[in-house]
Length: 148
Image (cartoon, rainbow, N blue to C red):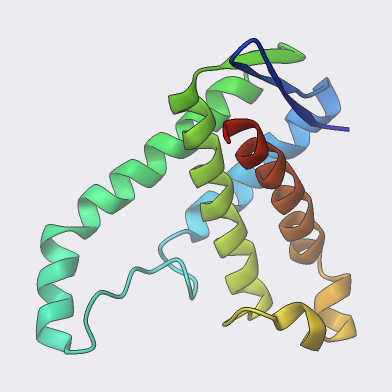
């Protein structure tokens, strides 16, 4: 199982070939949905005119940064290495990238607030996005713990 370790102030990400393939598939399936499904679209203003200005001026940079975070994940899983030593910046990019993917999976599940797990229907729990959401959450928790 995927594992994150901190050794001598270095963060090591342990992913075997199958885990790397799964993460690569998740990134490719969910990344096109980021910025389209609920909770992945940044809403800065309730007023339409101000939100349109935000979309015009800020959204391109938000999208660029999201893409850069996902590129760090792609580079890592595409390396063919079972153990990757991450810089702090790369680990942070992984954590943000996993969050972007989790928001996309959650949006596809219809998640719209915290505490949804207790109210999740059996159909939601059987959906592939539910398993993706849970698995990415565990990996993200390990990364955050290693960064602390």
